[in-house]
Length: 87
Image (cartoon, rainbow, N blue to C red; front, side, top):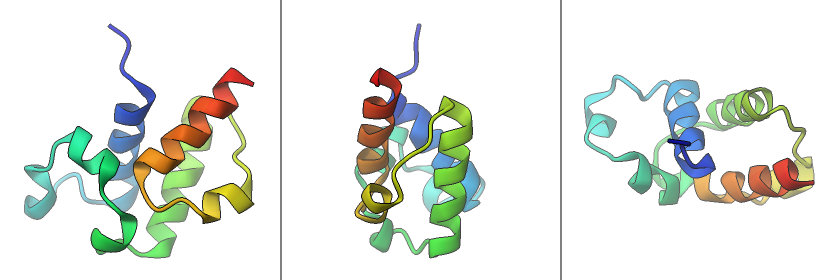
């Protein structure tokens, strides 16, 4: 079964942000993490940039920096990835 882009992005985000083993985030499902706003997750901008770079590597795409800068959640990034994969 193919894992949806949104869920793959959430898993990449957990790793890149270093929250995969933090108790507070352990109970948060991948689906919930997809919709969570970055500014509510107590994640710094460096972790978000690491996430973006990991996503680009994982999916073999280059995301537009202007569009990335407007992303407020994993879901927003997943939309950009979906568009890039289809292009």
